[in-house]
Each structure stands twice: as structure tokens, then as C-alpha cells.
Image (cartoon, rainbow, N blue to C red; front, side, top):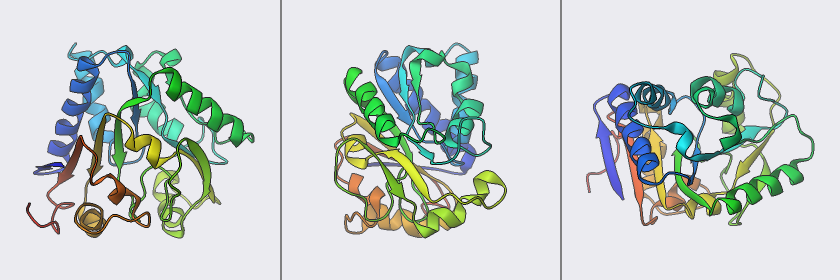
Length: 241
């Protein structure tokens, strides 16, 4: 496990963007999976700036959307698709991207289509994952099953309670659709990213306490190529290795 601690959120974002860009340059035409959410937004802004400077070609790889709130579509503010379109996908060739649509009622078909997309590109080569307040990654909630592929899941109460920060109001979101942690674990490279003092307790649990499906991020501790990107606040409770 490689841990990099930035002085602040800006340093964290720049360092994370450099890792993503480095992978894209080294492994074009592979499949990457990048988490939506607030934490990666700074890294995505830096990636767009790097593309404008000619330092990376974001359309040289393929993309799998990590997850989505069931009941929300790409045009809904705060949906994962909406966040990613605004932050990153807008500068990428659309045919290189597959996402979940939370308005599509046939979740089983969507799962199979995403699984086929992943398989057709030789699996996920790189994934960037945030660590949720309850330790979730994507919508792999506490108690997540150890299965390959994609699935729908009842959202944990913590996830539902913090969802309003994405929507600006409370919405009756109760279900998510996600790529499962086992499929993500099979990626060649995994980056876990977290920022803010409120994340410090769950970061410590994810990195330095026992591996357990009750803290899904902890299941990545023994990944053979794991990088953990933190700011000083998120790292404030971990014990130096």
C-alpha cells in the first residue's frame, strides 16, 4: 500500500490527477472507472486542464461509470452521470463511455450490459474510488456481497442522509446500482482518495483496522497495486507505517 498525503485539497487533487494521467498515457485503449462525488472533482478539473495543455488525451481510454442513484437520470442535478458529465465526460468522446441510467427500470439488463462492456475491454485497468462516510466505495454499502459483476443495492442510512449534499435537498433515494467491489478489486491499479477531517475516522478504519465487508474500502488493503491519496485532515488519525 502506497500512501501519499497532500498538504491540502489542492495538492491532493493535483497529485491524484497526475496518477490518473500517468496511467492513461501508459495504457491507452484500456478501461478505467472513476468515481463521481465531491472528493474527485478537483482531480477532474486538473485532468481537463492537463488535456487543454496537451499533457494527456482523455479519449485514448474507455470509461465505465461506477454507480448511479436509482430514480435519477443524466439530466438530474447531483446524479452520478450529471456530475461526471459536467466535471469530465464533456471533453471525452461519448462513444468511449458507458454509464448507468437510474431512470431505466430494467436494472438487471443494465448490469449485464455493464458487465459485458467491462469484459469486452479486458476488465478494468484502473479505478479511482472515494471512501464514503460509512466506508462504502461506489454503492458497495456496509455488508456488501463478495460477488463479481454489477448489482442493485438498498442504500445504507448514512448514504441516504448525506445524499442531500449532492442534490441541495432531500430526495427519496433508497436504491443504488453499482459495479461490485470484487470486479473493482480485479483492476490492475486501484486508487483510494479521501479528504477532510470528517473522513479521518473511516479512513483509519479502512486502512489500518481489520478487513471487513462492513467497511467495504478496507477490502482493498491487500491489493497488489493500491495507492491511497489523502490530504492532511483525512490522514490525521492514521498511524505512520
